[in-house]
Every structure is written in C-alpha cells, then in structure tokens.
Image (cartoon, rainbow, N blue to C red; front, side, top):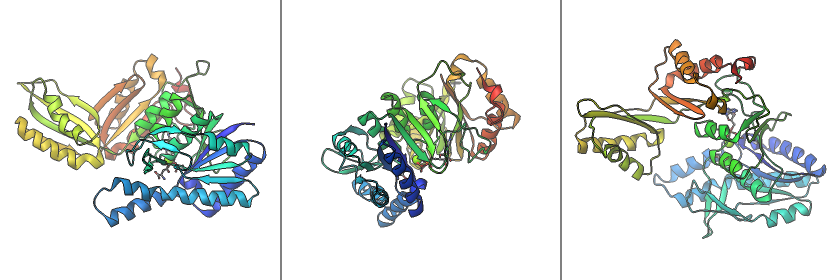
Length: 412
Ligand code: ADP
Ligand code: ASP
Ligand code: MG
C-alpha cells in the first residue's frame, strides 16, 4: 500500500470524457488499496481563456484580481473529477488551495509555497477518501488567493508529495515521459527511462516546458521521487531521481530550446569600470530578468555589450537601453526578438571534453551562425536565428546519437 500524489495536466482533463477516464484510473488504484491525492490543472485552454477575458476587461495589471480569476479554472476541474469519482463508488473530496492551507508568499502570479498543512489530507486518506486538490493556487497569510505561475500545478503536486512524504509523485500528461527533446520538434526523439534532478532542472530552466522549473527544484530539494507518465498510455514513464553511479550514463541527456528570448546589444560604450552595472541596472530595476550576457574585449577605449531577456520584456528593455545609451554616449542600440536559445544538457559532459566543438561543428555544417555561447558544467547553450530552430535541434539530435536508434554513440 503506497501513498501516491498524482497530477493530471490540462489535456488530461480537457473534456468530460477524459475526466471520466482519469476517474476510472484513480478509482481502480484506490480500490486496490493505495492512498491517493490528485492535483489537477484547469481543463486545457481554460487558463488562457481566463487570461484573455481579464485582458479584455482592462489593459492595466491588477495582480490580485488576476489570481482570483485564473484560479477558477482548477476549481471547476476538482469538482468535476470528484463527482466522477463519487459516481464510481470511490469516496473522494475536493479542496481548493486555500482549503488545504497551501500557504504562499504574496507574489501574485508567481507565488512561492511556504508551508502546507498535511493533517487534513492525511485524515481523509486514513478514512479511505481520495483527496482532490486544485493545482496552481494557494493563499497568502492575509487570505488572498495566489497562483504559482504557468504550469504551477506540477509544483502543487510535488509540494504536497513532500509534505505528506509520499512514496512517489506522478505527473500525468500528454506524452509518455521525458524525451531527449520535445517530440513536437523531433519526432525521432527517444524517451528516457530516467534523468537526474540536476539535468531535468537544467532542461526546464533552458526552456523544456514539460515540468515547471520550481517543481523540479522542489523535488530535488526534498528528494521526492518524481515520475512523468502518460494519462492515455500504459508505461513506466521517466523517473527523475538522484544520479545513479551504477547506470551507464549518456553523454548528453537532452536538448532544450527556448523561443521566448530576445537579444539586445549596445555598441561603442566607453570601456570603463562600472559600465556593466550602468547598462544592466535600469533593466533589472524594471524587474526584467536578464539571461545571457556577453561583453567584448575593448578596443580603442570602447566595447560592445550584449544580453538576452524574455521576449515579452523586449520593448521595455530596448527603451531603457536607448536611454542608457544616450547617457553613456554609446554608439547605438540594436535589438532582435527573432532569436532562440538551443542547449545541450547532460551530466556526462562534466567528464568529457570536445562536446562544445562537436556542437559548433554540427551547426556550422548546416550553415547556422552562432550569435552567443554560454556554458556551465552540465550544459552548453547557443543563441541562433529563430528560423534555424528546427534544423539546429534536429541536426544536434542526430550528431549526438540521441535518436531512438542512436544510443551507442552517446555513451560515456
Ligand atoms: P500538461 O498540460 O499536462 O501540464 P504540458 O503541455 O505542460 O502538459 O507538458 C507536456 C508537453 O511538453 C508535451 O506535449 C511536449 O510537447 C512538451 N515537451 C517539451 N520538452 C519535452 C521533452 N523533453 N520531453 C517530453 N515532452 C516535452
Ligand atoms: N492551469 C495553469 C496553467 O495553464 C496551471 C497548470 O496547468 O499547471 O498554466
Ligand atoms: Mg504543464
């Protein structure tokens, strides 16, 4: 008998019929004796619909009210699923984030979980009930509804699993596991049986939207065994766990990409102490996150400075940089929001040189120009023109033997 937390994403609960299927599955497992907490997302498309409604109502940002509206999607799903479970003779109860006291900070739209009181859920489980919880939402210390950011139901599930010391947290979605890259871009991508927390965290941070970044960080911190599985297909999915020395490790575990990037360059800035902070200061003060940063070697007392931001922040960052440019007497500001970042991720990289070179050579063979490069112990990222995204990902996937039939090339 195990205590399992399961999360069903938007497409898995997208219709009444699909919710019925989820109920069948949960019910069978509960009747077999497992204690189950289910966290659910809004029905697919619902959160986007709610965001669009709010945008139609007002062009201003009303952070508190936004959370009140977007959190309603999940409330619908918990009630529908609980009805379906009860109809199948499976005792169940639904709870909103505030009812289970999912306490967060007050950062509306991107709240962080502080504490969960598990006693109520444990009492229900002891009494043989399935506990159905609304994902994505919480409550702050003043009783305001908060949300955890897009994809936040993953984090709800992991946080509950950590609080209840569950045996496993299972993320049910529309793919049957974590693949070497998004199968929508490379249909020959291969499903991974396991991946380390560290690699999954890099993949998520570098743009793989299969799991919310925070859910992976949380699972790693509290050592929650996390598994990604299909709602529609049987299988053991992908286990996200600690590094396992006994297992033959791949050199590269996967390729992540991010289309949400934009690049800004300021040229001809005086090459003096304090310039980097003068350039980036106003941008960070405007709450814009900066991703990659590159500064050229100075020549003739001047240098160029390039960084990337989220595409949504491009216009504001461009304006701010224009002002800074005038203040510093720089030459010009150039920007491009049609760029993407492609990254190779793998713990195997740590002990292996030459990966960067293979990566650059592969892109060169396809005549793909690299605009920026950044590396860390277990990843290499490049920025390229957006039009090369598919070609870049597919050629790297091939070069590193990541295809379903290419495993042999990729072992350490
Ligand atoms: P849910 O609604 O269940 O939360 P998401 O859309 O958030 O589902 O995540 C599942 C999607 O993630 C898949 O349909 C797939 O296109 C995408 N994805 C991105 N990178 C990967 C990857 N490396 N492996 C598998 N799926 C990926
Ligand atoms: N419904 C929310 C979203 O679409 C949260 C989630 O699905 O995880 O982002
Ligand atoms: Mg998701």
